[in-house]
Image 1 (cartoon, rainbow, N blue to C red):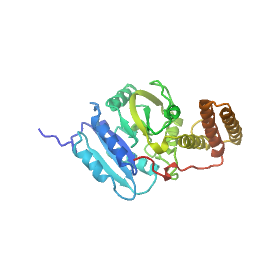
Image 2: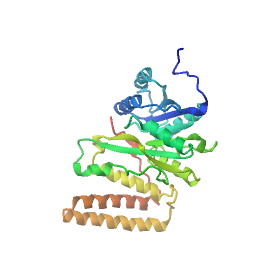
Image 3: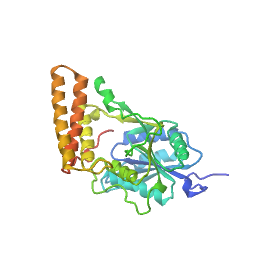
Image 4: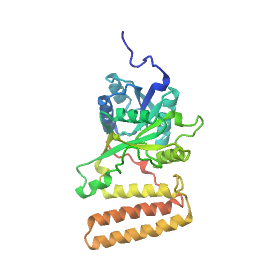
Length: 318
């Protein structure tokens, strides 16, 4: 019997699982991600498909995706979203997964590569939790050789233990069981198309409704840090952007108050003064830590005034 992998007879729509990818002008990175997805082991519990949303004014990567689809054991579909903005692209993924009746949507970034057992680990833990929690997987930084050795540790995201509960998470390696969303629940905030953090706000909103967000150490992806990001300037901007988000009152348990703004403003100034003192006594690592704390704290202070930073105005990567 011949099986058409693009039109299979599913046992039930709830058994579908979509791996969702947003991409914009990074064909090299997208190709590496798709190659890694073709190498992954597939869970027996779900019918897997991949959906790629290209966020651009023209379908530059349609042929690339079609080429991978032709040799894939599972369907890889393509969609063009011409409204520029990462929340717009993420909402396309949500809409696609809901339209086909998927049980879950797994977000993965186009600058990442998945480990062979990545999806098996996510699905195993999802089954263990009865698909009742958002799962955030482990992200391992692979930093460009152009980076100074002393900066490399600062690119690694915090590694946690499986089962650790989070207040929010990003969408760079995350399984979202769609049954956790209310039928009329809003998606990602499209009023901030070029801002960072709309994924953090989205998952924080779920957590505020009592939805657990759990860490899954076994589900690992490797994030490529390209040369243009492998520097202290990028780390500083990232910390400042996180601070802006936390100070804006958009994240659960982080209220927007004048008192918090004043506290973090003073803390930021103190950290920057500490960084300057470390320079004088040639304590490089202590200087970097103090500097980055200062960037985050000043971001928290300025977030009170609704200051915005738009990191997606430029595309970094290849």
